[in-house]
Structure formats: structure tokens, C-alpha cells
Length: 216
Image (cartoon, rainbow, N blue to C red; front, side, top):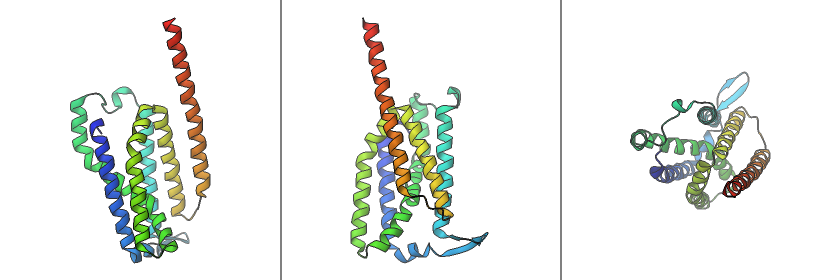
């Protein structure tokens, strides 16, 4: 997206995601029905929830792998134009609603299990709705600074895409009842971020040292 439209796309996409979460909460019987098996494959029951997680995980794997290829392997001429204002404007008009739709759909995939869990933990719909609004409010507040930071640090961007690959694999595993403790995932992410923070600090020190040497 063109830089001047990224914040609008984030906010609109997350707002639609909040609406979709509230709609999921409003249709509790349908959401709980997603846990019922629709058919079996090799004695493995496949429910509506499993299909949503599987398709969402595969989409994440494709999208993240494609973006990693563009960042790491693609030649400059293969990359989408990032500095041509006219090209950015045309691409923004074409992709604006597609990107917003992707944000909303992926948020449904991410939130489905949490909504099902919330239904089993809390009987008061108002409490669950308030939690959804608060969560999306935090995302709306944090989306721009985090997005800007990731865009300004290419290595962090690749790391974030690698996280999406990991999450996609976890979603595919969850679709086939292979449950991975969330603590393992969060620990791996936190460790990777800590290492990358050290790398960023080291690069800044080397850059400052070279600047000082050239000035001298």
C-alpha cells in the first residue's frame, strides 16, 4: 500500500475484524456447531472449525512465503515498485479493499478458537463483547507504530513473516488435532525478538563507529 494509505487500511481492516468477532459472538449456537464433525478422512474427523483453520493456515503459509521470497530472493526488477508515486497510487486503488478483506478474514481465523474458548468460559455476552472491543482497541493503537517499525527494519520484517509461517503451520496442525502449547510459540517468538533487538543495537553501534571514524 502507499505509505499515506496504510494507516487507513489498517484501521478499517481491524474495524471490520471487530465487527466480524462481534458477529461470531452473536451467533453462539452456530459457532459451537463448528466443532461438530462434517466428514472423516482416514478416521480423522473434520469439522467446520478444522476447515477454517486449515484454509487460514494454508493462506498464511502462501502469503508469508511469497513475501519472504520478495524480500530475500527476488531481483530488484521483480519487486513491486515502492518509490514511483504513480505506481503506488494505482496499486493502492486496486489492492485497497483486497488488503482490508485479507485483514478481516485472517482475524476471523485467528479469533475463532478464542471465541469458542470464551463461550465455554463466560456466560455473559456483554463481557465477551467488551473484551473483543478492548482487544481490537489495543490493536488499533499499536498497529501503526509497530507497522512503521517493521517497515523501517527489513530484518524485523523478514522475522515477522517467519512468525506468520510458524503460525500458519500451527493452524494447519490444529486443524488435524495436533495441539501445540501456545507457551512454546510465544517463547520462540520472544527469544527471536530478543536476538533481533541485540542485532539492531549492534548495527547501530557499528554505524555510529563508522560515522565517527569518517568524521575524524
